[in-house]
Length: 388
Length: 145
Image 1 (cartoon, rainbow over the protein chains, first blue to last red):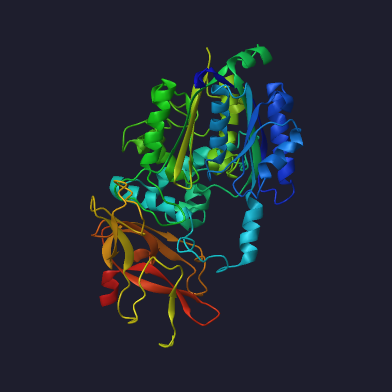
Image 2: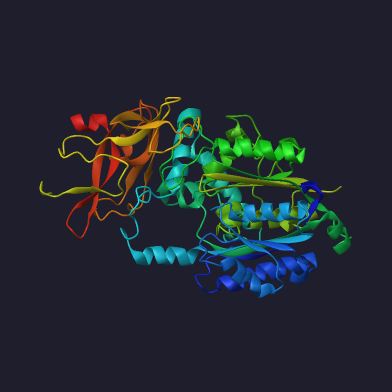
């Protein structure tokens, strides 16, 4: 058994959105989990191991939520890696199967960011802000990237706005997306939105979300037995790295970490997959802020350094382009609750590889990559490929 | 503000708080005795060569602005009614470290490559009436004008 003998058996998710307590965490997790189990054609009795991602988890949250699906004695592990939490549950479940520890494994992520936002606001300014790195708005970190790139490469805010508009317009075609605009979003509209941290506007940033998503993984044998009618979707890579020391490293701030982490993690993932960026038909990335997506075009190897602007100007990362990015709307439009975000990427990637992504289908998609960074300090990349 | 008030760092171990309010603070850093790399904040293991043979040192108060942004929301943890928007930047110190922190100044004042200088900003007062302070950088030329 190797990682390449692991397949995705089923996926499920709840539309991301600001439910503000209208759906409890348990309800969210249950809908996504049962959705994925049903899609796979199994129940918890068939699952040998579970990894549960929840960023703001109180003690024992993972086991508690798993009891909603049954009490079977299976090992349950809680995973937290900030924005990359869901991606890491997927990686761990894939390696559980690859190692032979289980034949079928479950990766479940859920989160309610609106409840956290409400708690922070009611606490008031100055309360609980007693550490040196808690005064700065986390969004500023990625704005610092944007300002430096504009200085070095002459990038314009309109490039960031074009990326954001693309993702908003993808979101409008995705029933699971939080933001579903009733009109075509233009770069001008994105630029005119309220400024958060120069040069990033609210429409270049992800919203505050609640949601849940789940993936069931298993051996290729199980995939063929359960759904002989479906193409086998194999895990080709499941890579995870943390910060390595780089020149100009920053250690202090609400978000830190070098951008080069995406490059080194991508190298590891491509090598493990035996595939390169030229083999990918679509990709997903951590577009919490639109300028990040531009950086990742280069760091993930889809164009040379300094050519990201050209890629977006030519529409190569949108509908009909060479490498469509974030076809479900990305973090900007599909949403970004935290725990389940990486599994929502997997959900969309699997629909695309099955040829079931509706109006946003990438024609003939066979392989794709899902990337997230967490807290700036970790990077996770999962690569999936459909058997021809 | 009264001169009698004591200034207390928001968190100990990161920067000096000089008694003389005219004197700029310095950052508490670590130098690796094996490879000479300098780190802020302080650490017990060199992040570059993993040596545990390290010494405490102070760095600053001057450096060069590597990048900056301007946040259009009030600063967390500040009770200053004027702190409704603020700059954030990364400053390269000549000793080596790149430091992320709050900037003092207006949005149109900042230029990548300009010289910056450390100062202390009062965020709020604690129950004892002490000023809670944090380090920030301001354009050096702003002081002269």
